Length: 117
Image (tube, rainbow, N blue to C red):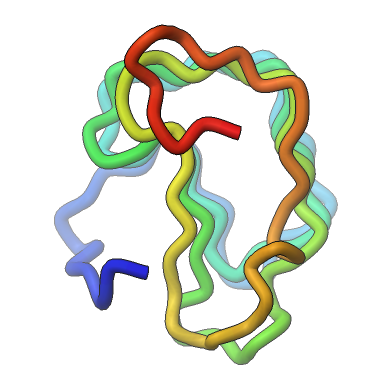
C-alpha cells in the first residue's frame, strides 16, 4: 500500500470499476497508459492472454479505494505477458486480505519486469 494516490490525472488502458464482475478480458495489447488494466472494487473477472508494455506506473492495478473489505475478490489473472516495469500493484484502504483479490498463474515476465507473479 503506497497511500492515497491522485488518480484523476491517470490514463487507464482498460478500467473495470465499481463492482464490475463476470468480465473476460482476453488477447488485448495495452501500451502507453499510466496503468494498463485497473480493477477497482471488481470481482470474479478473468484477464487472460493479454500483453502489457510501456505502462508508466504498473501494467495491472488492483485496488479497493472507497470500498468495504471483501469487495474485490476472486479475479483470475493468467497467461499474460508483462514487459519491463512494475507488473502488478495492489493498493487500497480497506485492510482486507489481499490474497483473495486475485489468483495469478502462467505469467510471462520479460526481463526488467518487477512485481511479476
